[in-house]
Image (cartoon, rainbow, N blue to C red; front, side):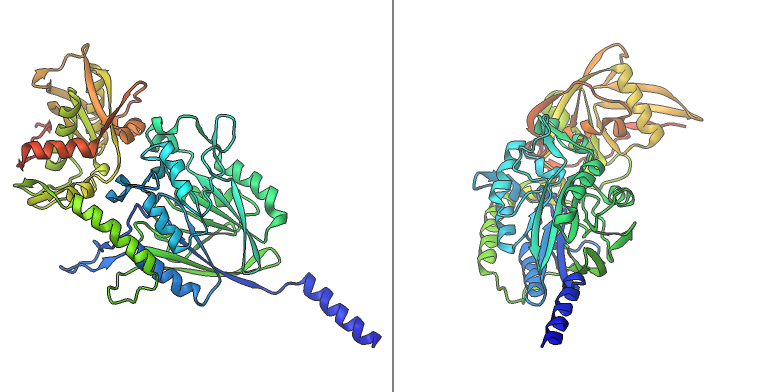
Length: 495
């Protein structure tokens, strides 16, 4: 009997010292950009393109995996901006319906992205209150280094017998990505230092530590290279489609593209505070209308919101007599947009970043939704003053670097002599440039934050206006009605 007791005791001691592997499947999304309904798979070459994405397909896929596996569901930010649903209030928050849908899908946690601040800081807080899952962003604090946006620095969730520490990190470049009026009182701490401090704090309390980041794949790779004690990075911001998770300095790095087109699936086995095995993939969320919908509550809610959006945004506002085509240099669509913003604020000169123009349009009727697909970002207009000499230096920068910028109000001809640019003619509003004169200029708030990159100069003082670029271009389209915008050689090289 004593021998049997000793034998059983040894088994108990052995099993407590060497625990059996525990398995978990981490499902993850990022940069969904309000894509709650399916959209065309633009990369498919067929004339009739299949539909992909949407929250109903996402929910069905998540549920099918939950039926057979232990699941943790995470989102890495930029839920907002990309569909007019973000222009409608739900439970007091613009875009709040998106987070109600995420509640219904069953998210466990999220880390905010820069676009989640596009409307206002106050609206962001309201979004976090709609969400029934925690908002995690450790390096997002106020001037006193306190978290005041209803965000936590980390959470510990137990799932499948595994204690999981989840730490949120947002890009330190936030101030160059968001209207600064929306970030008053906010400070962004060092991602590496913040993350390492929390890992050191919670390592003994957890079996697994995940960094849920919104900063981009390159930054995630640098973070992984310089961190200790971290197991997994679920990333975002760069819209990187990592088909098979990367292993960088022992850290598993995953990301699922954008626009709710994929669901990331990462299977792991954990033993003795370590990931001993993993594999992952991206699941393409092809829309299947014949799929039996189990989440009836979600389906009804999605349909009700879609009907409201369709009613408002399927209205025709103008007609294009020529195709609107984006180009690396000057484009007819860019000319119309920059003219609209210049006229709206009574400026002398307007600049627009090419990458803010997101879609071409074919000739024919233009609906509000068509325009929203062209200008999906909630950019507000800004004004500031520059001298003629400064504007001349900007044009020189655009020409020499081929900066992807559209212009309005400027007409010039130039010759290139090696690296030197010689202006033959330079007019603003049809009058010769006066280098000493002060001119009113306008750009959108995003481009203002990135002025050094796009224009070659910093803009120290600017006025943020209560006018969005989308609204002003919509007004201009309604006024013109029949649009025949053309390329005009606004910055013309002569030989």
